[in-house]
Length: 270
Image (cartoon, helix red, strand yellow):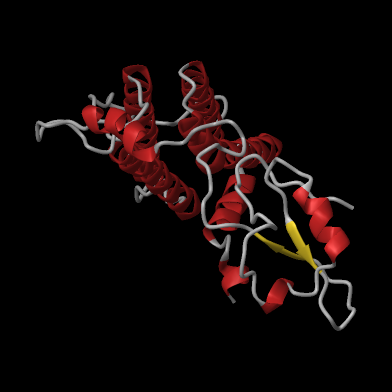
């Protein structure tokens, strides 16, 4: 079998003088066979121990032709990126392929998360009143408010990571009374929560579409990995709470539901 060298390499010419003992075992017929090639060839030697191993050796002088036909010239290509590095201190150095539309959409989502957090905090304050005294619901909405705030802060950190600027917007004043003559306060507050979770999910999907439209794969991956799956789980959980509260009505069942929320997670800790 004849082994011909790849075009990117200039290999050992078998006619070179003083080859040394490594190649001394090559037969004269093999040598004449290699000498018949005009293109670069591989030098093959069979060891004396008869193992049949093949030894391939290349010369020091290699040409500059690429293996794949694609030339990678790092110092030439980096010049283009070097020209894009901002010279003024007011501009981010980390920003790359991050459009203004994506930056604005992330700021909008930050505002959504803070507004939802503000509503949940107001509901927490309502159920924590001494004349309402549903501590389980108060605990649930306090934790929900904190979670939405953490979502907003995560988006703020991402905005800074991509080289954008966080621009906080005004927050709408939420309701302070959540009593409902027909549904009762617990069911009314939980249905409101379900609506807010679905609205948040719709806004996240819109943010994801903005990322796709601008070919920002990293932003799309961030939204998918950090938010979308968690949002679907939250919608499922709140939907079950709404169904349960509709079953128990406004009476004594609400207290039992509240106790369930109050002691939720304690068994896992124990």
